[in-house]
Image: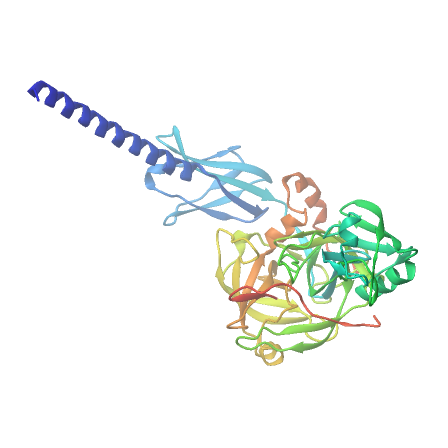
Length: 462
């Protein structure tokens, strides 16, 4: 091969290597810049200072937009204290050479919100009435044929059966009676609710050796017993549980748009032990004893509006709500009921705070330190989900899970996340929150209910 060709090939190879190196550097720089420029979101109550991480020294000095909304303090180590001067949203930006943005914070300063902490045991009904269709199955008729009456009539899993043959149903047994009592010439009218829609289905029921059948797996509306976390005395909005209500069979989130919150009484406690998460055994009468409506079921709890006044004698005037940035490791109080309907206060310790916040109600790790509670319940038990956590006189969160291997420990969710899910912390609520700082005013046959939320590998919903 001629020498000139060899020189040209080496030059081409060199240019290619350089180009690849340049592209790699640019991509790395863009990736790093993107990571830096992704804004860090902070929410802080009015009147509270906070600090920001300065990041790399070459990132420059911070600037605020609007500039008069924050005051920057003296640097201590890698942190800079910041004092908000007004409510609203502010952007903090670090600029390299005062020109190139390399680090961003979004700060929402919200009016200090006061709520009344809960602690009451409550029952959750996923619908105001009727029975839920969990699934469908093939019915074997007296003629040996296989039939799917409900499916063929257009029924679907998730429907709520309200009436059969004009008769209201409230549990699988009453459903069976209504089907057999209402069938005329092998047909029966079934009223169902699907989301917000009301439907009337004409079902050709199957005659079996045990009577007429719809071919549905039905379940009553009771989801279990949990604990009320807080309520807002101005709007009546409440939050409870701190985690989603899931179906015990499928593990899927149960849709709730017209549920009920009802008074519950703790009749006994099955104590926890290593490998055995205990539970509160509670009772409630049903929708006739409702104290609120439930309209939201999400990863950080259930939410709705109270229809009856409640009180908490331990904190009758309510408490401020702490943002996640104010939650610290250290002692705290847990409010819950372990007998009857009396709210009691117990010592716990927050031993770890997960920041940034982890999803699924696992923002912090708590440990029960109250020997009296350990003696009575063995630690955290199922049914304590939603029990408020008070630290430094503020609502900081709620219990969500118990560690199966060590029931003295469990997870908690930040109160900030629960208030946001309740619709009390959106930016469009800033003006309304100013009106909510006033102290709060004062305002069956039973059957046992066990929590039905699925267990995890190392922890279980409390």
